[in-house]
Amino acid sequence: MSQPTDGSTGEQGRGERLEFSDVGLLSPVWAGTLPEALTSDHEIAQAMVVVEASLQRALREHDMGPAGRIGTPALDVRRLARDAVQPGNPTLPLVSALREGMSDEDAAAVHHGATSQDVVDSALMLVASSVLERITDELVDLARLLADLASEHRGTTCVARTLTQQAIPTILGFRVAGWLDGVLDALESVRSCLPLPVSLGGPVGTAVAYGSAGPAVAATLARELGLAAPAISWHTNRAPVLHLAACLTEVGNACGSIAADLLLMSQTEVGEADDGSAGRSSAMAHKANPTRSVLVVSAARQLPGLLATIASCGLGSSERPAGDWHAEWQPLRTMLRLAGAAVERTVDIAEQMSFDVEAMQRNLGTLLSALDRDDAWAAEQTAHVGVWIDRVLARHASVCPS
Image (tube, rainbow, N blue to C red; front, side, top):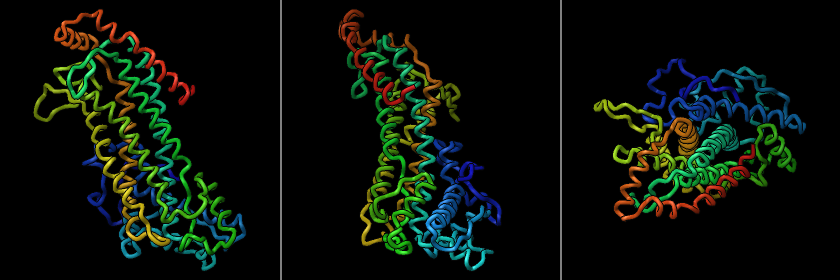
């Protein structure tokens, strides 16, 4: 795939104005992030070209069809989008663009044996793989930062809160270890998604153009793209997409839980944490809003609803789904952006956030006064907590070996 050259607009010019592009004005959580760039219309179109070119190489390896080669055409992505309305997806206009200027023999080699769904699904899996690799790296970095914080604050006593109210004493390192455990869960889920599958079922899933060599051609295409070869066509078995969407939601939950805790801890009256944002207010100059945490929570809140949309698209009938498949595209792209951006923003938070231990002691004093207890009692309540921190740190060492 080509390297992204912009945030989200893809190809521009060619008679189109910027007003047609979504540049993230209402999506500050992902605006300017690498996941946004990796999922732009331009990148998706380029991934479709990569699929078509890789298919030709796979066919040549199996001595099938003409030996034409696809170059690297300059695509008018906006035109592809408009021309996708009549066929219902962008593959046909893309194939037409790729065939322009070719001989009849070479043109016949383009898209040989594949169907539109194969190209779109394989391209989306290729794009998703790039985002998941980025998310994996970011989660590993986040886990390292949290492990260091958990160790640093294994002796920092603070107030535990249940149902938003002061409960009994706990250890800050224990809370951070809980964050870390969630991040490790998400990391293992993301790793379980990879490699994502290629699609090469042809018109009705049987890859009829390749005959009994269909599985071998699919395996070669998968190798070319760095994807997995499925046992059979998944045109109507949308489990790979559902699994991917569920993993992205788990990533959002892991990051969102950290951000949600920080929002509570950074309230003026609590004052125990600062996420490093110092977000300005348009009306109140005295405020320093925890905007990074706000944006991460916003991403985490959106993901479950999009997951529900993906889940509702899994009832594909016959050999090719009508409408269900089409309804997946935009929610999946949005989920990749939200989850990828949530991790990127949370790493920024973990690198820059700070804790106010004096505020924690002040709040703990309020609790002890209300319970008529003292520091010795608080120490008794938290003396054992280190064993739990150690368990999570040991898990971290196992999941993320240095």
